[in-house]
Length: 193
Length: 408
Image (tube, rainbow over all chains, first blue to last red; front, side):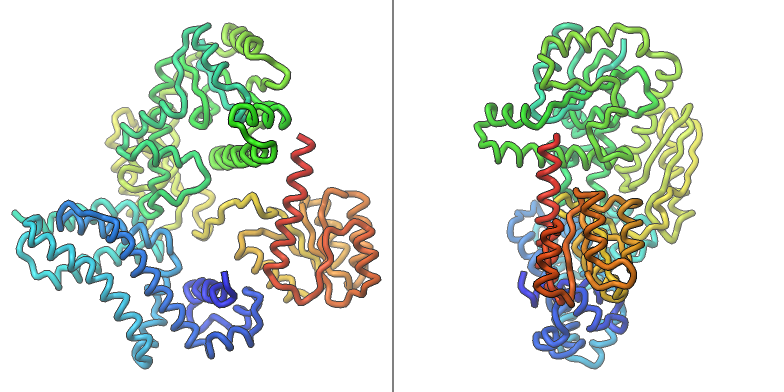
């Protein structure tokens, strides 16, 4: 791992655990063993570093989904919805830091004033919702999903799934216990009767 | 007649012994693959995936839906069901799932010295001695992790866990089968009422546990006289709601008289689960009077999954050496009171097996020579690159492991 990558990795952990304001570059320097000068050489300032982390989050999530859907031959659209929900939960289980970052207020606050931040978040959410939308469209075509407004339905599927991840991030409830019920509920909502 | 459970080191002739017992006393064999097959039928997770539950790596499972826990819960259920059939020889990882309070189990451990196992591995698998040693080490690590998951101890060969520990480098297969057979016939391990009851409670707890994992829950379950206790180890905000749900699921399992829930001792611990990494020293003692530096270093090591203890002066360092049994020590030279060189001298005199890495900002070439002559493992200058330090720690750990291996 290059120095830049190790700084990014540690920064992801810090921003997720402590938030933007409470992450100090000095601490990051101590933890990574990279001199503060080195960090600033690579990332200019804390905001740039935060943006680089968000970009990594975006790329990681999108690439993982691409790799997953590319290798899959879904039986039909409804099945694809179910499997995408499962994969989303799987991804969240394996990358808690990334999802914690997306569930913190910091990025959204910055997005109000920083167009790059806005773009990263928009890209991330667009790709995630697109996958659901693709599945819904596929289902309408093959008849496994009834006539529904695809775009809005995709957003609702996404927010249900992401809400469950939030349950887990903040230890509200044992979210794992709800995952199969979530899939069953979505199936009931979508199925063409 | 008691049930037999056999847990064995690899390359300790487990297979011919299990086969020999099967032929001599007519017990059925319940191997790991049998239990995996049964568990797979019970829960629908594929056999190849369930097998991964025995391994330290968890990546094939879905963390979010607790698939690993579901696999283990159904392995337990498979073992509990098989146990009630009597006249069974359990062998392998799954044999350790039988609770200790079931006393009509003859618990056997087969183990041999490293030389014997390496030779057996080399002969069976056409491996070089080095590869054989590496393979056995990896297999032992998996067994240690499995033990750690189910018992307090990480030592799979801990004699207190077994009724018989058979040294296979000194015993041939026939002798071992004969010795086990003699033991099976003795009165001591015959099933009594209490033990039968415990076996039924094991099945009930396993049924409840499996049902709960099928609903996505991850909790520990115990049962005494059909009264079931569910132990919640993960912190949740909506606790009473969770308790209600757990109770209502458990109460529907046939045979359950009543259900209690309680919060386990790990409940309030944070969720950050650090896996044991055998390649890194678990016990590092950091000695330095610069508090900020030493705390930062400790955090940095923790990020790399290396736990460490901290001392700020020579005196408390020597105290910690006695109390804490560190394996590796990272030591600064300039300290008030007993200085680093003196600490090194005393440690090497009383506890030569501790590897000491000197990390100093002030040292001279002369100091380096003194330290290395006194038996320091390495001499590093501040500021140190964290990767250099962790690599040095790994090397020190490797040396310790090699030494342990030759002792075994």
